[in-house]
Image (cartoon, rainbow, N blue to C red):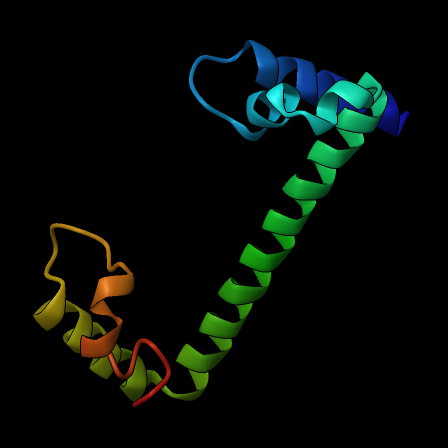
Length: 104
């Protein structure tokens, strides 16, 4: 059952326009030595790890927001002053974002 689902997801991803992990891994040297089922399962591990880590980060943020809403306001002010509304922060901004980078 799971292998069929993973295979269907991989095949769907390989047919989509644009870049994705399935296409990238499929072209790799390592993938040439794998069966399509092994490749599909490896891709699913990548997807699962992304989903779980994102979910945990969102849970931590919500808990922190509920416990310390005043810090969220301070962090938002810091982001607005340094970054503005036109872009996302990047690694070059860390030195100017003590609260958002966990140093404040």
